[in-house]
Length: 169
Figure 1 (tube, rainbow, N blue to C red):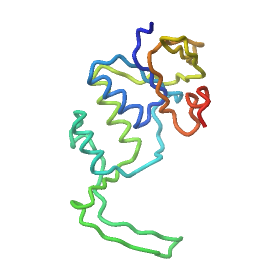
Figure 2 (cartoon, rainbow, N blue to C red; figure 1 turned 180 degrees about the vertical axis):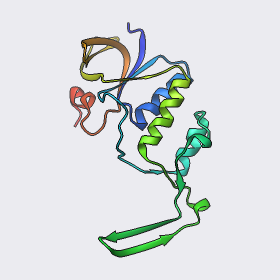
Figure 3 (cartoon, helix red, strand yellow; figure 1 turned 60 degrees about the vertical axis):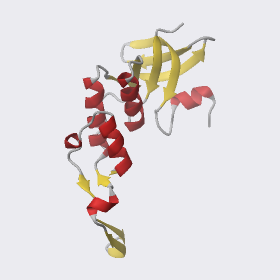
Figure 4 (cartoon, rainbow, N blue to C red; figure 1 turned 90 degrees about the horizontal axis):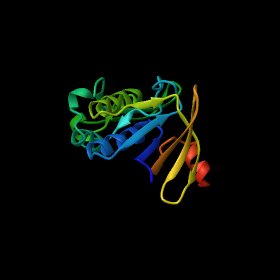
């Protein structure tokens, strides 16, 4: 039987959120990411009102969500030509503009407060089912390690090693 309940591959917003929620409930988990450090480029910028409500429930205060701005308008353009322009009352839309790198920073800080940490530079390469648990093979600069766990979560993006190893398209 595995000592570790959940192994999470991928430390983007989904993986970090899961790690936080597991830690809040006292469920042992580890979170790995193949990148050596947190990304410096963003893949998303919009955060919905419900997301900020969930952050609050996770113990992340609104004051931690900086730098961010409420969406007041939207301009769709083709080069310099405006195709459409919309204005919003920022208090009504609930959409907050916050770079994904900032979202990940906020989530990682909360995980740290709960005693967790992202293991950067560690890539899940494959796994096997040993009946009552899974064994994941993880590679880093020092070689490989096998990690036994009850559950393995693939939060590792579009080119997921977990999905590939599981044969999921």
